[in-house]
Length: 348
Figure 1 (tube, rainbow, N blue to C red):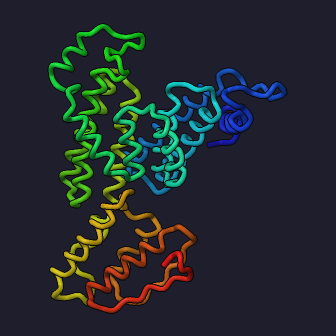
Figure 2 (cartoon, rainbow, N blue to C red):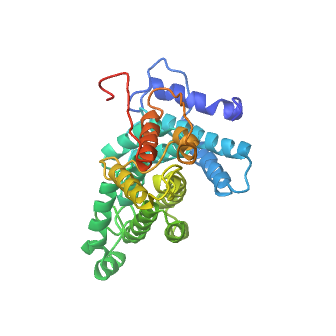
């Protein structure tokens, strides 16, 4: 992270990306070097891999190491964006921006991740696995369900179709399939989508054992991608495994207690109904809201374990409304009357 590292590589890349258009620099632009974009991508994927390695050992890592890991992911995202922004159109640009978005999401920059992934999805150049990674980060669970159902019921993944595809002559890109998705990627996609669906079901019901089985299946696909030397699917599997693990830890199912809050003694059935209805209503939204933000995680235990007054001060769009909803949920379980006051009619 030293500013002098590689001759201020990231700063040079960001400067180049701001002044070029469609990959062309103005006539009087500084000479950035012909391989700057390649250097940025190599740097980005190297430090992203290191950051993920640190997160994999989160149980033994210090807080400083975890902070460094997330900083590495953010810096990787910046570097990939610099390499692809205003660059000459290329087939892999959508993939790189997708990966940059996933790195931003893991680094805690959700708004930045949304922007990068939205552009990537709009390109129409993502394969089913890559689209699913974007949908996972953007919480579009309905799209993931439709894609999984369509792929697993498709004749393309039947035994006969796959055997014929493997036996076919490769095209110019070395892929046996005329649509650019070869049988290997199809097999990996089927396994991947099935494992992601199982993981989301585990998150929905709060079952850590079922999640572990799903993550093991994703890791099998990750290893298979490595064995057959397809780096794109390998990155998708690795990032997805991390996203799903984080999602379980921050999910509503994991963080809203199963036991009624204080003052709701003898109202276990009422609490289960309220809890289930609240979680299901958020999951059913167009952009599913199945997890809590860091600002909300800091107070959720306080809401459901303590009946004293609570004051929370957060900036705009930092999650205050969800905290209020959780507080109302606790009050309803105690059969208390609640009043929700907002300073603006639009908020109400």
